[in-house]
Length: 93
Image (cartoon, rainbow, N blue to C red):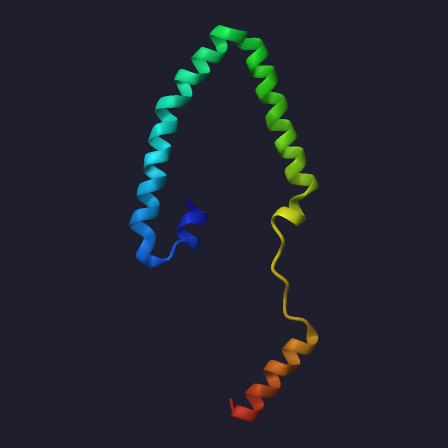
C-alpha cells in the first residue's frame, strides 16, 4: 500500500487501487481453495515443508541480492554540491 500510494500519479489513483482491490479479493477467494486442494493431494506436512523452503529461499535471495534488487539512492557527491552552490551564488540566492 505504501509503494502504491507513493508511486501512483494522482490522476491514476482510483484505477490503480481498484485493480489492487480486485486482485486482493481474488486471492482471498482462491488461496483457501488452492491450499485445500494441495493439502488433499500431498498432505499438510509436505505442503508446510515445501512452502517453508520456498519462503526461506526467497528471504535468502532478498538478503544476498538486496543491493542489486533495491539500489539505494546515491547522495550528491562533492562536485555536484559545489556546482549547485555556485549556481545559487550566481543567481543571487
